[in-house]
Image 1 (cartoon, rainbow, N blue to C red):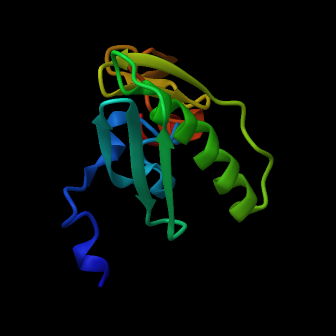
Image 2 (tube, helix red, strand yellow):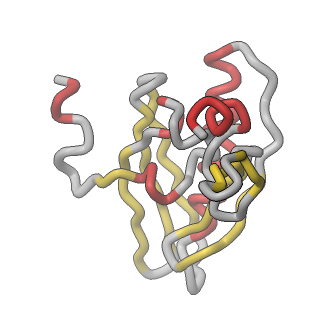
Length: 136
């Protein structure tokens, strides 16, 4: 059942990696999966419970990092999400940040500045402007 999401098959919470590009407070940011690499191949498999969909990506390239599958997942997931929700596809980009991936940016780059008590754009931000304004 739903209580077992993210358990088994060596899956883990991909949400903390920022692979979806969605606001971190949105249910659409939640994802579970697994990255993989072996000689000549990199891959990622992800499950998105908010839309009950899974995506698997395999590449036949070997790089010094596993960013190609995450980069592709960023674009594929947001195209799929837009189709499911009946909305326009957002403009997303991917920036490499580490060996395992990077950050999918679909414009959700706001953070609450505690001293100023206002929302500001930040490289570390993960909120939509609306979510930030509501919680700041």
